[in-house]
Length: 248
Image (cartoon, rainbow, N blue to C red; front, side):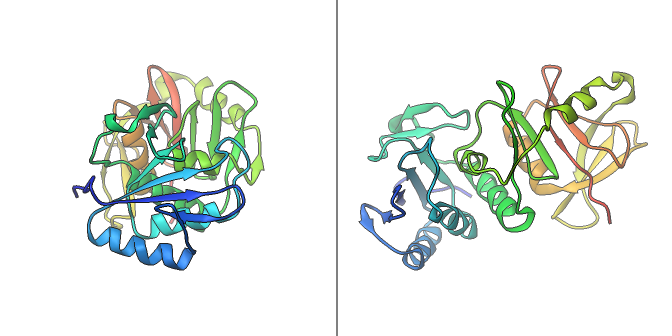
C-alpha cells in the first residue's frame, strides 16, 4: 500500500500524561476516531514524546496500541514541532529528507502490539555496549532500534542476562548450522517455515518476527541447527537476532 505524505496526524505525548493531536488536547477515544479517518485516507502518524529519554507516562502504551490497531505507519520525531524524523537506527534527520512513503512502520507497530498484548513481557540486557532485548520468543542485539520499539525497551518488565544465551549460540561449531530460507507455512499466514537448504531441517516460527527481521536485516543469513532450537539471523558473521520455533 502507498501512503499519502499529505495526510498526516501529529500526535504528542507529554510528560504530564496529556495527549495532543495536531496541537490540541484530546482523548484516546477521539484519537481512535481520528486515526480511523487517517486510515481511510492512507495517512501517516507523526509521533513525539516529551522527554524521550526519560520514563514515559503510562498513556504512551495506549497510544501505541491505537496506532497498531489501525495498522498505520508511524514516523518518530525527537522535536515537538515535528521538524525531524528519527530513523530506525535512532538517528535524527530533517523532516524534508524523509521518504514520503514509509513502508516499515506498520510491521514495527504490529510487533509492538504483539509484544504488549500477547507476549506481555520485555526482557532487556544492558550490561554491555550493545543492548539485547527479548519478548521470550525473539531476541535482537543492537544499539539503535525503531522508535516505537525503543519505547518498549526503555520500560522493560524484566532485566536479565540474555547475552550469555547469545554466546552459547555463537559458541557452537559453525559446521552444525545450516543455511536456510523462509517458505510459506501450511498453517496459515501467522506462521512461516524456516527450511535448511538441504531440506533436512524445518522449523515453524511466527511470521511477524520474520517480517520484522527481514526489514531490519535484509542481507542477513538465516541458519538453523535443529528443529527445536532457535533460528538465527547472522550479519557480518555476528548473530543479530534469533527466533524460537513454535511448538504445536
